[in-house]
View 1 (cartoon, rainbow, N blue to C red):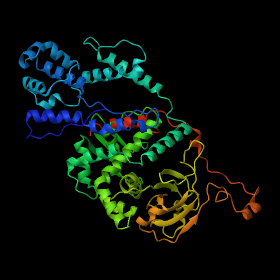
View 2 (cartoon, helix red, strand yellow):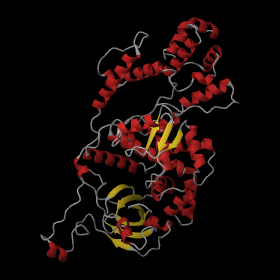
View 3 (tube, rainbow, N blue to C red):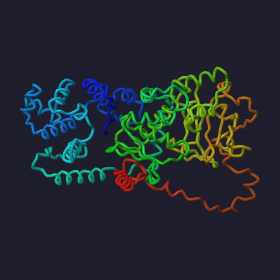
View 4 (cartoon, rainbow, N blue to C red):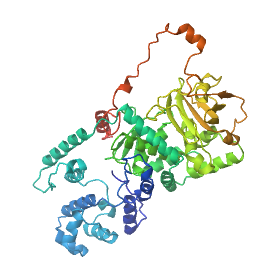
Length: 526
């Protein structure tokens, strides 16, 4: 992964410029601390995906060698100018020694180039790019598993030979990637992740810090994040944004790491507005994610990136202050959180679950379902019992007809908050459900009866009694109808053939790599 370019300023001294560039290379250190601390909380077999916080020595060495040769200098001649032995400079050029700030300054002065020329994040030539890629490939466990000796790309090794090796390695690695997951494996991974989220109250302190640090340089003062501030956050991390109409259908966004561009559509998909997608994409880089090892790793990264986006759009400090004030006035509401920070209702409800337990001492639950009651997303730490299969997965299960997430579809105005108390075998819950305009899904936020006193709408008279998972509650038809129609009905079921297949192969499930690469090639020259 490449790191953001340092921001340049003509008023910086050479030493300050060196320091600022080197800070970029250690940017992830604080962000990845939470991954290391919380690694035991992740599903088994997951890695933290943390990045090295040190300067890319191989890239620095390549640039140093390229510039030295372009100046017609030998190692001895350059060594005389900076007061270093040729052997010491050779170690730098081969990526075996980390330079000090004073030496970088001296080298830049001796080579008559700006300091940041040595610290650029792009290989200086096609040859250098190939050599760096070869070195990275040979450090990959898949390559090392072949037991081959290390191949040093000396001057007699042509570019074509290195390209052949890299192409063969790419194909070998693709063959090593098994189908991402069977439906059962995916459901197990999702259930494990949900349990981890419940155990920690769905609060990730490290990601909250990362989001706060991302906002710090742009002087965020509160309220909704403006488009200008959003683009400043993106720019600060070294990326530019391109809105396009021909983005591959299999992707929400595509990032060109060579030219540091993020491509996305100017359209909203529920919770995934263009602002949210942009920050979700940035989140992967800020949080130091690498290529997912398997579906569980992919799922964890998706959750973390989504959390980061929400934490930037609804910053912790501002949101907690707002929620505490609303609680003191017994006027908590998801719709107010949505309006103040200009996010979707779904993001506001999910963000409430991030902050409620940690800051408001309040357990809660969240559900996203369609009109048939099919659950697409859910979270709880308040004891509510969701329907689940034998693996513990709740996605795809059908919720009780008497829960607010289904009752809202029968209300006079499904697009307004629908308040309800639900008596269930695990207790009584106060819930508010709403269907966002242009959406086919209901979003429900619920809390225990004792916590209802803090919420707007608590005086509702709507109340239902659910005995699910008892089939007699709503899964079986009434006895009179069953007696009349049993054996006399033959419905043609809507087929869900996707449940019979393994998820698509590759590191990013469902993404068509051919479309992605063709898209990037088409837009690179813009």
